[in-house]
Image (cartoon, rainbow, N blue to C red; front, side, top):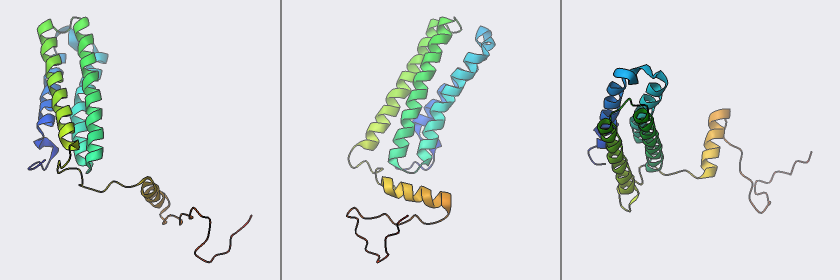
Length: 169
């Protein structure tokens, strides 16, 4: 992502924002505007697409970014499902529905392409931050919750190297 310093620089975020805005304003017109439940759902899901892109960008690792891009894809498909409901209820004309749905398909292709470019070898994004092992993550959580360093992990052989006697109940 050379030159990208903020999520607002990402073309996929800009397109998701435009799509969300267009669907929002259309949902405010005519009979569509009276279906409050659908309006809330469709606007929440379109906003979730752009929000997950932004949140993933801010996470700092490629692995987490890809996960949040997956969430964005899920929200995108949810929006397309809501568009189907709006069309079925005759809130959208066939042409409007087709335009919104196709824009979603184009955005989906862009997000998938972006994910693929990040997971390709030598993408330049892979090693922003070392991914921690499960043990390191547990130790970090322990320390954050208790305020104390985690206890030493016993060795697999059962032998004690610290010279302490074994404590029995």
